[in-house]
Amino acid sequence: MADLIAADDLPPIATAAQVAKVVQTSSDALAQDRYRRRGIPYVKIGGRVRYLRDDVIAYLTANRIGGDAA
Image (cartoon, rainbow, N blue to C red; front, top):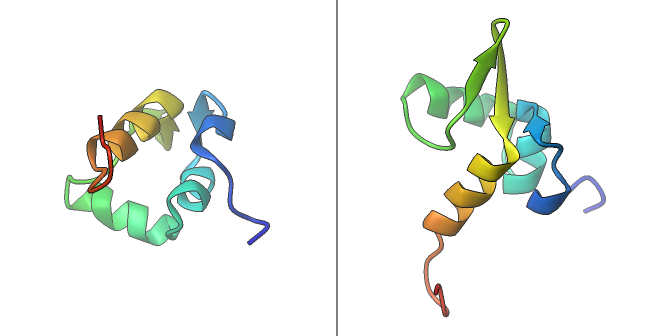
């Protein structure tokens, strides 16, 4: 899947579309998570939704299941 990107390759401030590629979901699914007040933390800049790379990585790390999740 050529359109997937690694979390470390996200810009410091990412769009929902960029984050969706990392977590293999859609921008609409991220919007539903925001509406339900769950999921990856986000910020609003001038009314636009943005995700901080560090928050995305922390969220993925915190939600890791199985293996050696140390």
